[in-house]
Length: 278
Image (cartoon, rainbow, N blue to C red; front, top):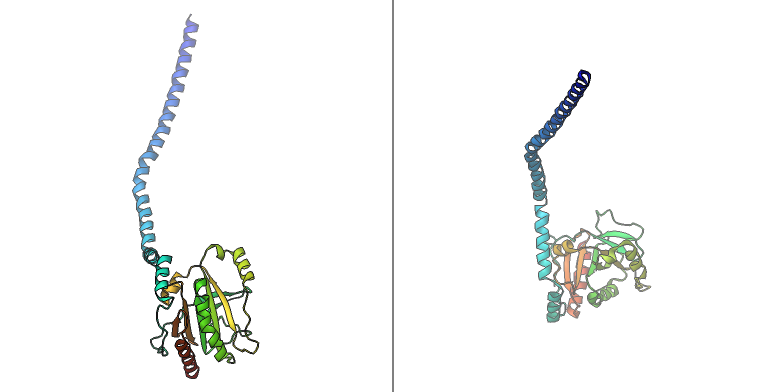
């Protein structure tokens, strides 16, 4: 009986010791876990502060970009297709009369740098100037004057021809001139590499006169052109824009829409004066 009682007491002591050990370690575990929970909130304000500072810095650094994008959206909503079409019906693309005289060099604006692609896939940048790194000495020399015709929609192609054809007829024997017809393609799908390559392949390059030294360069510009248009004040995308650019990249004369006989005479006269001046 005594032996049995001693055995039961020993078992009870072992159970109590095990329970005590388990509770002791559970207490340490819970204490440690609670310690982590207690310390975490003290770190959160610093984390939130750092995150907020980063976001504020990011927003501050892009504040101008955000405002520019808002201005752009507002501008393009106000100047959409229907507004252009309404205006086009009123004046037929003649948003203004061509310059009668050359724009003075001091007040002339620079032609923005524009990446263009030829139908064979070769690329270059306009304008071609004396300090440009884009000049290909094998094919394009630095011209004294360049006639750059800008077409943002297919509707303006005939307008461009009303200027470029008489220009070629009058200056076809000049080596110090360049003529570029730039078609803008701003549809993102057409700018994808495979489609872009296919599109350039099907483009038909019109032949120049066999006796013409001056070559008509047909090029394409892909992508978003909003900022380019803003710099040269392109308002209506349905009309054509014709610019005379000197060897320093300055716009010295401009015309719009379909050329009248008087405006063609002004273009040719101003080109001759620029050639003499250069």
